[in-house]
Image (cartoon, rainbow over all chains, first blue to last red; front, side, top):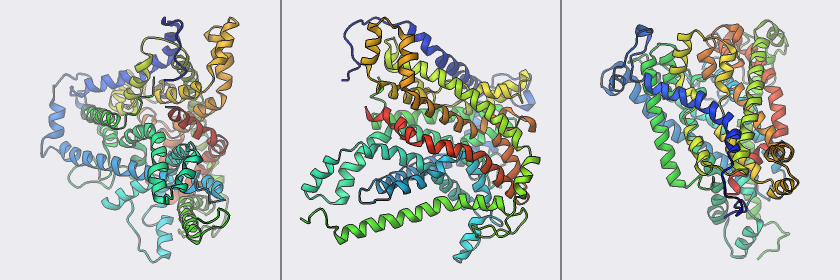
Length: 311
Length: 280
């Protein structure tokens, strides 16, 4: 397959485990151990009432999550649906905007493309946390500059963060602003690996611009970006920052205090643990998250054959 | 067929439509940032306008930065970020070297397994982390927070391995002929040649730490221990109208050094992110 294959010396080099151990050990202690402990807590009644003397309660927390009329399930089910919708809409939108911009700034006929590329990447250069908080200010209904700008065009004050629908639009748009430069950069890497011969051959065959995009440009960008797209879906699924720092999960629901209209599972798990001290329910939600992210990843891998080259 | 020198009218329309779309997108992307600059130069409590040029320019917000906890937050965050990034760098390069150059059981599936398991970051385990730290009395300590971020990153290992694979194996082999072992090859050949990638990993980790909120919010409680994220959040949340100007000034001061570093590293970053994938 590649030049990496060497015939001589097929024995195992045990020193490799020495090189691996710092990364693997810290990963096990700091990532996997809390994960297993979370699974354990989700089967207990560990909360403020039973902080010192908690015990195993079986599937009680999970039953609570899914039983109708329970205040936690009123919060859980819509939050779950919104989390999935947010992940699919937001990540796909970010990717396609990034791809289209990459195709545009990669256009040979555009002499000044370099300048555009630099300007378009600027949102990536600002740490996400800072820009999300800044957006919270810019989108303020009464004092924010975005509404002041729209006012010039005769558009009335939009309740960006106060209305359930607009709050969701805000979250998706802000995430687009934050993420398209990353996808643009990744797709550009793919586009630049296309040899010009392919386009020359296409020109000779009299192929139009759309067909060039469909059969040459898109497949190349797709091939390079797909291994990065899978982790991107998973990270949007857990994009705590963009939700919590922009809307705080709000606006609040009238029917339950546990989750607002823009809360995703990750942010509601955080709130349940830190604001309501319900470690048991928070852990149960995290376990549901583990399962979904795991299944999503497996489906994605089957579908795209990514990581096949990792040998 | 038209000669290649002459630009067809249809081609000119196409190029101009792309140009105009890009202008609009760039305006939409940059106006919000310019507004933050404007806000930092406008007196607090002033009425908000759509003007990008500040109506009553003043540096009062920047003077106020010194009275806020900004420099404490910046110091805390930088301390955490540098320690975490240095630790990441050591662990990542060692593991990536093993995956790129050594033969061992688990080489084939080890990295993929780690990447899959890390789809579950430890920030998903806030309940476990918070409850345990509360019970053993280790909340609100900066070093505990630092420790939680230090765990090895499979994604970093993966992109670094991709970069190491592009360094010709012939270089190691000639060193091995001269009697060099893995330690020499790793420290004297692979690492120096991978310097651009090391800069990228270091910088990505710094940026990631600057933007980390969930674990900071879980572990840290007193304002003296606040990171930049917690501090800025406390400024803007609730008392938006009073603090918007101050917030804008703090944000710009914090973001500027990183943005400049980013400008230098971005070409390398693009290369690093895609090199692993392209060879596949």
